[in-house]
Length: 286
Ligand SMILES: C[S@@+](CC[C@H](N)C(=O)[O-])C[C@H]1O[C@@H](n2cnc3c(N)ncnc32)[C@H](O)[C@@H]1O
Image (cartoon, rainbow, N blue to C red):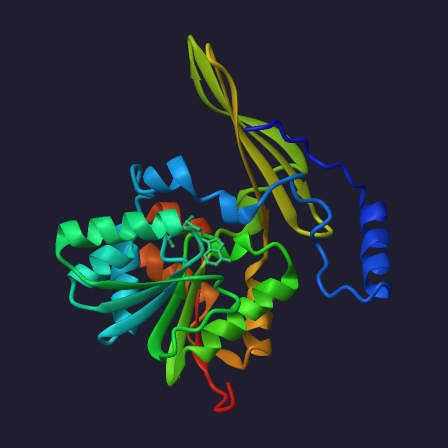
């Protein structure tokens, strides 16, 4: 893999970039500061897909309990990955379909589903545009994955696509960290793992104007330097709520605050910084 370079953009310059893009008739803003050369479609392939679920996140039981409350029999997961959550849900008797960009993730999902003798539907494509042709009582998007969409426009499109898939009284459930959990400074290095013969570092930079968070996970060992870059566009709960409203959804069953309380009640202290919002379809036209 070739070395990547973090792009340096001052806030003033970013504003100028945004204005220039708007004048030029471009739709999307916020792409300017992503890790140069980073391609989201490639970042969940190969080894990453192969080992995606080797180290579970630790919130699987709580997530399952919460999702089961909203999924009477059927659900759609946007970005189903290799089935960390979808497979246990399917094993509990809920029919799960998934949308997923990475063919390697889908292969892993299908292999694991066959081992468990459960059926999970997976459609390869982009969560902002692709349709399964069905509607569901529950659509969910968890593990910060809305942040993988690098523009506000695409994040809104994702809410619209979720709304498109909902039954008239269906619920879209989305879970993210709050951005401050990731952005202790605009630029920092976190020593994630240190051994006598290797170090693993998270090299991070955050642009508060575009809300783009660039990270390169760097491993240095005897074989050299290994890079795993990723860019995300962070969004606060309030912005996500507005996106939901733009997509014709309304917060009803569970707001960010109530969800935090609920998750605390389920004694999942790690989840304190991970709000969940359930939004309900309210417009017949969507
Ligand atoms: C962190 S993993 C989460 C997987 C799964 N939702 C989970 O909770 O374990 C992120 C997944 O999102 C997928 N992804 C990223 N951008 C996508 C997009 N625009 N459309 C569909 N899938 C996408 C990646 O390929 C990857 O499998």
